[in-house]
Image (cartoon, rainbow, N blue to C red; front, top):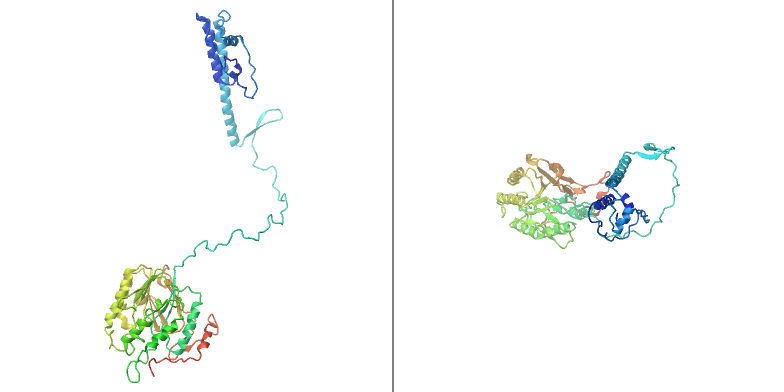
Length: 487
């Protein structure tokens, strides 16, 4: 650039200044050599525009003109002293430009730091630069009056069409409850009046809103007394007895399980025959597919030799059905080895505990009285081996009984239903704390009970008022016990 005469660039570019100084030094010292000329300069493009886009006015000097022409300077026109002075001036110019460039970098940084500190600069009336620090107090207090009055008209008119079409698929699945709920009943029907009332009570249960999964009948489907007829022989149990009971409970809205009681089995004239009728009409009643029942949601296992013994797990609750009736009127039948039969019940109970996973247990049987003591000794042992598993024995005893810590065992509970026609609602929460909180029940509003004869109940106040108005539908039925098989 220096050779092209663009000397003004030396004010903007440190390298140009150094270039000029070196070329001038070379040109001026070349006079001491024998060769009076230097090689012709290379060809360069036209000088660039100035930083503001205007042509640069080239300041021509004798030295530059001679350089452009390729001529060597005359040694007699300048002495060495002038050469050194010129070089010194150019070098000083180079230093000044570099210092100015450095200040151009530092000063903006200092200004940025001042801004971060909240310091600003301005000119006063005399043109002096002064520092200004902003005040933390606003110059004006905010107005409590809005600049515009709010509009009473909506900005958009409401749409009559929904923004989204309704979906038939729920956005979230309903939360499944952890509790198991079911109905239980026992010791019915003993009379024609009870046979008439039970379908109405089942209908009330269906409309109660309870999320029940099944119904249990805990045994004794006829009156067991008197045991003998006038001739001193056990009363017969005809097949139509079992058929009639099956027809009554076809009105159930849930899968229904039957436990065997002694009244319609061991107290019959022919216990082996009555057992056959049980198997044919009632022991697999829960498997009926023609009644429109909902699916149980569990697989039911049965003892191969004694199908009255069953088990299944539903909602982490193990249900065990047992054959635990009273000992019976006579031992003159195939079941007279009573201890053997009780041991088989105990083995089924132990097997069910061993082969399933669960958090609580319900054991269903007809009786918990003394003649079944052999079985309950085995149950005590199992309960003690599983202290963290709440266990309830559910039976019937003609009167309602509840016994926490049954037989002195903290996790063993017993409930015995009475002989009413209204099913009791039982709830099992296997995740509750404390056995009493795991097993809860609602006796609802019993409408009839107390056999021999059946008595109707009425309520004139409280939550049960009007519940038993259905009794009027059966008021003309016989309340006396039916003596099945009697002429």
